[in-house]
Length: 510
Image 1 (cartoon, rainbow, N blue to C red):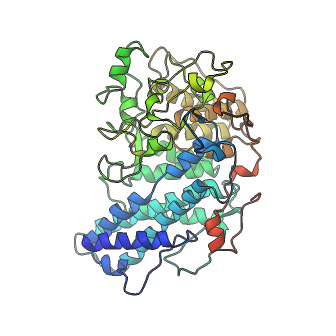
Image 2: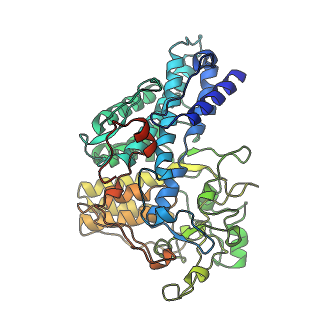
Image 3: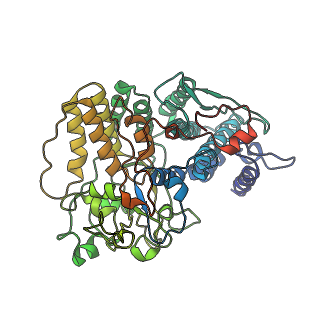
């Protein structure tokens, strides 16, 4: 274990000293390498759990998506945080863009190091299944990292011939300058990783680790993003059949908004299944989450929106965007209560109130903290509701509008704590796509989905919609939307990559 700790420390230091050009760590003469530290199957497991699972982080996309799109507004106490991103300033020097790129390639690099070390290890009798499962888990995380890169940095996720990202094979030399390759080539490698993982993963993992349901969920998302809807539907259905149920909105305390309701619903001992899931008191419908225990020097996901606590006195920097808030009916939608702290100021006259900044502050509480650790929660990467939304999207692509409506309604029914949801029907594909985007906007707010959802479903051939802000979402007059054809719906290759790899092809517009 000491060898593993030294290796982790050495890798982290080397990575911090290098540019993020290929996420390659510098190896100095005499440095402890993975070939020395990783000599047994148990070493591989320690490296996987302690250095690869923990390296994956979705904070940058949550932060950038929330600020850039229509999920948040600027609070009175915000003196400049995220102003540029909120005003559509997106370029190769944007920190979150570099963060998505670098974090993905950090995970990829560490997986490649593990795979290289594994070739030198012969598992003992009885260790073969564990050995193969370690490789399967590592390759699944590499596939997920590449899918994330494709989601932001290719101009068209559904075009296999479009330029994708850099495929890093093994552990290249520090001065290697690797090119971007086509989406089709990247997707083929992702599929290879997932096929290997499915064939070699052992059963028994919890939702903090790779499971076969996670493998199918990654496939479902990937094929939906590629608009290969027959496959997307197949794998989404496989996850739904994998033993999950949508987290229920009931039991719900009486009189939402009252003092007694607040005491019950927002307490650590709440019995509401949906709220318990967000407070990390129950798995609920989570397929895969990044574990963030109370103990340890982990980042706090709620710090992306607030300073000290998720209440009005916690110095919030960003609050919920007004148009998003208006989509959540307080009389029946559990998300209205689960995502907003009860200390929020909700003004009935926000639209005409000149002091709206101070009278209408919708404090985000989707990440309420766990136990005695405010602001810190597991980062939910895949949930069951996404699989139903993928089924709905696939049905629209097949022009099966009743099936699309049925799957959207299943999610809405699950989030309803009072009354019966009205019947749902669509008359056109565009109407259906718009309603799917609407439901995804509410269901996945502050989880890092909205940017990717708009860039792929908002286009003219589908929903033909873009960012939908309220004028109260900023302290100055700014455009309330951004053309869905704007070049900023593809992220730039980060400046750090361009400086270290000057031959790389930059995305259009940057």
